[in-house]
Length: 323
Image 1 (cartoon, rainbow, N blue to C red):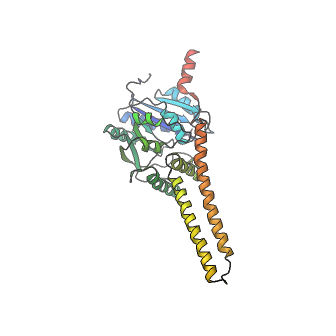
Image 2 (image 1 turned 30 degrees about the horizontal axis):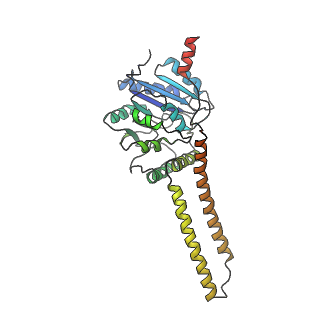
């Protein structure tokens, strides 16, 4: 039985990476939650395989063949979590769109609460964890990211930018208009609406395996946020350069006066080297920051794509029908 696009209420986008063992359980739990919420006939799950090294795509194909509400997208190259989400958002059909991880740390039972919150008139609904199951360093990184988002993106204070969230279809359609190669979903959301609400959820332990996020990927995510949606880092570099220039002029005047008043004043080799290294470090940091912006601009001007779709389960199904 096919799902009627006109009556489809909820699309659930799930980026998939090395989660072959989890996907059948994830789909089963989502289906159970939808039956409980009386949404069983009006939802779809879009599983986006981000070119992982395991057999996730084969599992997705099998799930799509046995469940009419499962649709799969297979990317040719690893694009990253947020770009994989963009691939899914480009193919949603429901009036409400939910985004969740593939590791079952996000309870599918909360999907009903998200739908009800959005039906009350809000554009976006984020989830707030009651008991986070992440490692301490990841929690510390999230708190730092939260502070930076408040500063750079004018994020409302107290709003936690969870990866488990829902939004109206209109918001998703605005988000996918962004064509830059480096995507940060929450930055795009904050750029198109100010209507937010939250629901509290119980954060669950990962069902299988280990988290795919490490410090390098968290740093990369922070750079996307800092350089794709704000010029504040460039302004800070300008302010630092101005302050150092003023400080350098003050130090030059100080050294001249000190030498005139105290000819025996010994030369400060160590302090001189320290100042040179400090100023050189700041200059290198500022040049690197400017280079980050220029690099992203260069890639966008050269039309580097966010993702490359290899195939989808519905394309494969049509090919099978023709043969």
